[in-house]
Length: 428
Image (cartoon, rainbow, N blue to C red):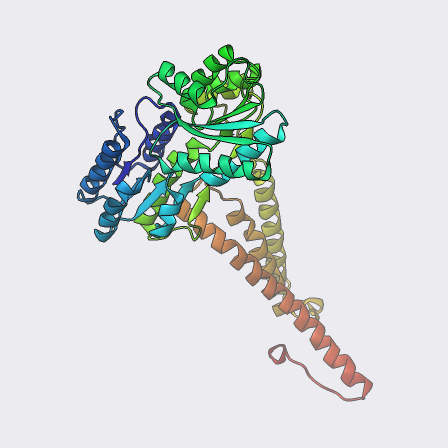
């Protein structure tokens, strides 16, 4: 039984994929998942406090693992209380620095500061920006703060670029958001030379409306959606940053299930899922895939690379032929064992050669067995039998040949010394 507490609210489209993949992983593994999506709250403090309460409640329900986001310090005490109850905790998406400070087993996300720094450099390297501003789509979330801090630090290498700071842009009121951005930029006209960094996909429409009011500014955005893909095609955004919400939802359920089942975990604590800069819209097929939360994605064509079924008849035929020939020669040897020529050819060793080649040929039978015709247990037995049959048969056949040659060698060496010796079968 795995629990999850994420700060993704019902109105944030980014989290649609994350929650879908959490459920998908639980279905794939056949485990019970305790995960509820929160409604929008009146403030970050209330929001994150409720998250902490939910974490403690889940950990008291005898769960085998918990994955969480860490949007602020409000949830740290709850995480530590869960660990004191021997519940392993993994963090995703937000709170990398805190996760490392409290020594969580894993954190799954992009490095937000580094992503913000790289995004700022992309904007500045375009050569179209003299002023930059960060649109904080989730005030109070340390991950978004890190993105804006990265943008600010990117401007330090560009003395001619002015950093206008960050502006809180709430998702539930476009008009208020637009007014706040316009007040921060404090310019009329086309906003030439202004660069905006949007820190979440939910405000793509705000940027679009600003573009209609103030042309010629440039912008980049975190996260992806069909609206952002359209913005890439239309030139609204220079880039979109993909942090792979699919993996942020799917991986933690798997890791905690493996830990609960095998008591094993990865050595790597930070599992990075981004950032990947997307500069052009993907194919329509991929758009449909992502908009449906990867449920209708085209799957790779399955190729049957197992060729045993095709060659099995030839292998069995060769085995039967080799076995019959060995048996026939052995039968001939028994019938004509009193013949002088057969006696001089050392019938014991001839029989060993026949038996050895029969064993080597029989190794083809277990080699022809796979899971299409037998159970896993039978396949394991066949896998172990094949090398034993072949190696024992090879040893018997070639030890007989070696012994015959060594016996002749001893006789010929002594004949050169004019010595008469008798080398019996048992001597070799």
